[in-house]
Image (cartoon, rainbow, N blue to C red; front, side, top):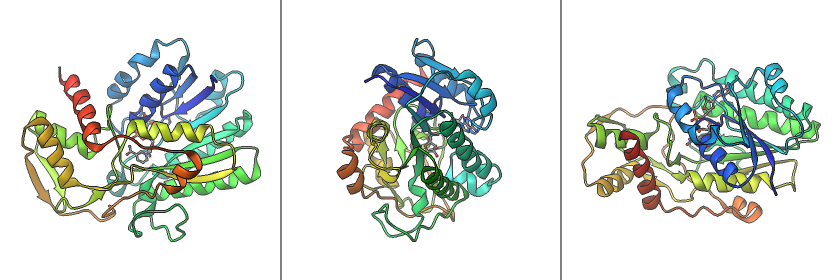
Length: 317
Ligand SMILES: NC(=O)c1ccc[n+]([C@@H]2O[C@H](COP(=O)([O-])OP(=O)(O)OC[C@H]3O[C@@H](n4cnc5c(N)ncnc54)[C@H](O)[C@@H]3O)[C@@H](O)[C@H]2O)c1
């Protein structure tokens, strides 16, 4: 059944892929995005080129905190808010922590207020695997000794707590999805796969912090969208947290090898000291999402990398 869905951060990497998916599946989409300059706003304008001319798509170019302006541009009833807007970047938050709390925690509370005021019953929140810090892997949602080791990760934990309070006091379900290292077409330029591709295709030096032995549970963007859509339809609980990952951690050095094999070219690596605040490994225990939501990540890393590189190469033309 067709739904009316608000996507905050809908011009970003995950958000723009999600909006295109929603439009292909006959939903009506309102994208709220302020095209912030964490990375080039031009990239975000390109991300929404397809969507912008679709009759069921509308764009509200505003900061999520300006709800007075936003609510004037919204009309009628909406089924769901998928809240992706955030200042992203674990590493950047370690260097420049200012503004993370404001954007991510205050911003989330303001959007929650808007949702409650508009009678929206389903709130999907983009949380992060970084919340787990260096707790033992694979990570489970029922861990109580969470150890976020960056300002960015802390804002995601505070936002989940705010969501819990809101869902207790109001007629709204808050479903938090902890995404694990998302990759695919439109990947954020600050993420490592993009840096590897840059080294291959633009002869840029690839700086590796540490020895490259850190592992990430790389999850293809279509599988993330699959998880989001399951959460959109999940109405059995007022508050729930789900890991949304691939379930197979892969070493950075292996990712480099896969990309070298796929392109037939060598990466130019410079090893530098590792950074405090980054986890050694991320690894999703997906049992809960599989059992309760029917989440089913399907994309093999080699296929995902192939799709990603195809998109990257097209952008160079
Ligand atoms: N990419 C990943 O691997 C990953 C992993 C875990 C969690 N997440 C979370 O998923 C969400 C989407 O991530 P992404 O990788 O697509 O990032 P992104 O930076 O590409 O997208 C975020 C979008 O939000 C917008 N935005 C930021 N602050 C805003 C504000 N105050 N008002 C309105 N719009 C604002 C930005 O302009 C951007 O278009 C984020 O919440 C991020 O923390 C991403």
